[in-house]
Length: 346
Picture 1 (spheres, rainbow, N blue to C red):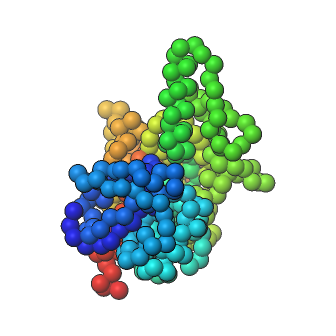
Picture 2 (picture 1 turned 90 degrees about the vertical axis):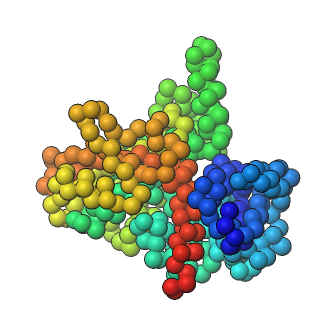
């Protein structure tokens, strides 16, 4: 790795933390010194990063001294406990939790969408929700070209969105189903909920807890975070978030009603030119994005682009992206890259 910044990762042993480490190496992020932090439970774990072994240490105030960028990926409560310490030590915190996303003084950043907002930070920058990032990557070029009147989005989210325990439960339930055993559930839809359902060979129309209007916190994240990203508190977004028995990569069915007319061909062209977006849309040869083939990859993939025949300026799109990469770790690293590449011009 190139010489450069002192970097810390809080939550280095978790799923997103591990993905962060892989991506930092893959993209040759300019690291001078790397500090891996975790809870007391995971402290002492040894992790191989780019061929070099690092010991994970328990998070402590001294660990943030001299850190330039700190990636936080250990959950909202942990972020809230350590963010002030890290910022006061002089670090830029790139937080992957929901703890600060809607705070007015914290930029919410997808570099391809609103990277220039990064430098309004006061020490903290937030990574949006994974489903929000995937949605925003596709809406941005459409908004720029034709404006957006209304969005209806249904997500089909992989179990890895519930962490490693969600993936383990799907594996175990699949084995039990094939063996004819009873399916035991303890994680989904929400680990803390009084009732749980199997995800193997099932679809669960709940991600996170419900509010009094019948929407889940996950659905409100998509609404409010997308509005903040596009600086439009009145953008109309109607979401439904669903958990499906897929390991990685979230899928989204997106219906967009634009202000100005936008043909299917023009939509396909602007999306094909959009950074970080790949169009796979050849229905004659049954080519369209699918989670099995997008997992472990960086872009957001879009296909099934077609007119909504029920409204004047409507389009339907099918979008798939690996939510652990672009939906989490990759976006965080790209925020760090944007900071490094543009800070001298600020």
